[in-house]
Length: 98
Image (cartoon, rainbow, N blue to C red; front, side, top):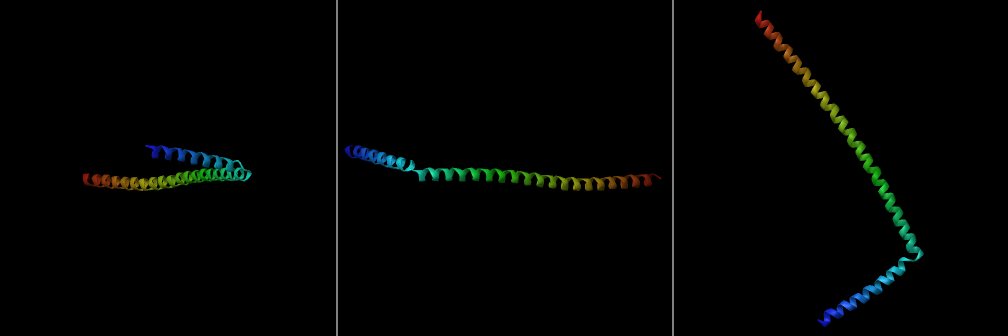
């Protein structure tokens, strides 16, 4: 039990010392400049990501419109063929009645 307890106190002490050193290093002007640069880079990346997402949305909408136009054209062609077939059937039926 003593071994585990002493390991805990050693780890706690080393962690405290290491935390204090890191905190002290983070307060220097170079660390503040680095923090500002990283923050700026993250903001730029977020802006570029938003632009990319907007561009992707626009492209998807344009593609959807193109597909809808093609489907409408094909549907119109099928409707015309069905109308032609109906007229042929009616003509055939009228000729058969005569």
